[in-house]
Length: 137
Image 1 (cartoon, rainbow, N blue to C red):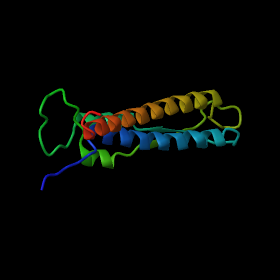
Image 2: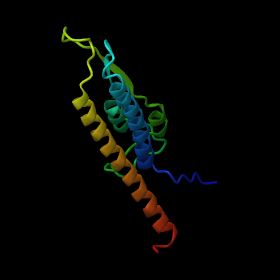
Image 3: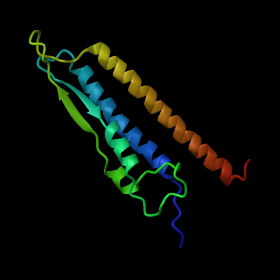
C-alpha cells in the first residue's frame, strides 16, 4: 500500500509557523495586559532561528529529487518549540516595567500580517489541490 500524504512538507511548515505565531500573539497580549504592572519584565517569543535550522538540516527518509526543492523534515519540525525570553527593565528608574506599548503594537501588527500571509498561502495550496482533484475545473 502506498504512503499517500495530502499534506506536503511546505504545508506542514506553514502550519507549524502559524502555531508558533499564535503562541507569539499570546505572549504579546500578555505584555499589553501587564503594561501597567510594576516590575513586569517584557517577554518575547522567538522561533525563527529554530525554524530556519530545521529547514537547513532536514531528516528526510528519501533524498531530494532536485537540489532546489524545499527540504523540510517532518519529525524535527514537529518537535520544534519556540522560546520565551524575558527582558527586565535595565533603566534603573520608573516602576521596573520594561513594556513599551508602541513596540508591542508594532510587534502585534507584524505578527498579525505574517499570520494572515501564512493563512493565504495555505488557502492557495488547498485551492490548487481542489483544482487538480476536479480535473482542472
